[in-house]
Image (cartoon, rainbow, N blue to C red; front, side, top):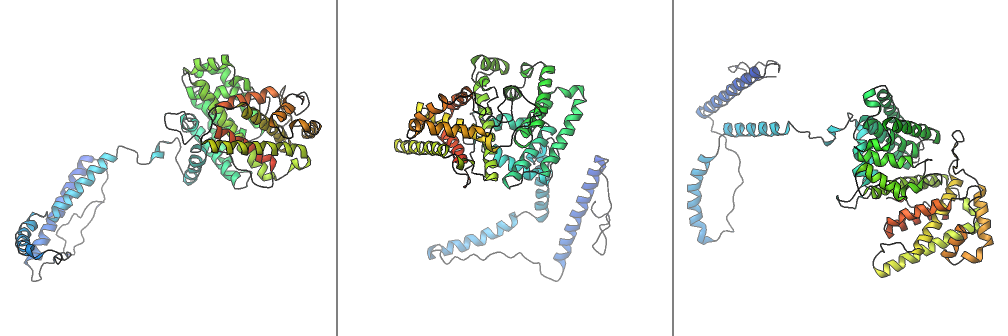
Length: 500
């Protein structure tokens, strides 16, 4: 709406007219005319006010007290004040000058900022609503910032360098990320299902279905990023059957594109896709996964050739550790919800867990006495961590829901409740070997306990996991051990959540 068109109105309220922005030249001309018209009005108003009978109102100014000024300077101060007052008021700019200067500064600032995006989330692939802001804040504050957040920017960070760029690269990946955050937020509040998460997942599936029908998008990087993110969602919050369906779809996509080698132009996708090819079940606490792919030099060398990065093996293991941490969190949340002390019926297994806990506490006391954590894993630490994972894998199979039999996989690790009974009986038989010694417990579990029995973890798989965990710091390894041991040792109290 423009300024008044009748500047000589006797009522002081001018007429206004609406203008459009179709003609920028006409708009600027109209604005300049309106500006000069208003300026003349102000000037004539000041002249009429000065010629009237009422005195001109002066602005109120604070009184300056000079009681603290020494007397020797009073005379000079008075004379200086009189002369400076005459000159200072003459030098003050008029109201018209101030208005013009303010208007010019505002126009300059708006012109500078108009080309940029003041909202940092304005570049996201979807238009944000309030629910997006809440979930995005939860995801950034709990999922991303807790992942190696204490390391400097030069160090590889799985959330910042891999998942964050992939999640924000397209609308489908972003919706799956929001579904992941909604499911996690609902789970920590005690709800197993989230309608918000389901709504975001359905929207992501709709976008993926449209891309499948488009030849240009069917095998694009965005499509791979969305399917890989969907697999991570189903892995944590979905079912085994849904996860297997999407995993089969990813394998078909990789075959059509030419394998993981075809993703060489996108190192992030290549890393995540390579790790996904090693997974057979939803969790790394399942011995059917191909853990050897993270250890075999030939496999890691092939990955470095694909990505063109000599540190690809280290980055792959960082991604694996993040995936393992998510499995541990899911393990903890499930044990907190069930509150079932299954191990109460297996006293010798409880004694073994107590032995491991005491050994960890003694190790921490020695570390505090030395004043630093050792960088390398000692043989004692290796054996203790191997015992912890051996028992944790076996125990998880007893408290987690059994895997669906609709999609059997050869060599898969199937839940067998008799495994805990067999282990407790074995520990009872060789009680004198391990009662006071972790090394004896290691020998009892890994040499005397046959892995041919149903439900018994594969020894090579467990030792392979521990070999990968050698690269972690001593504090990180102790955190993993404490988390897993507290799940089984005391289900009456809430075990501490381990954050990577």
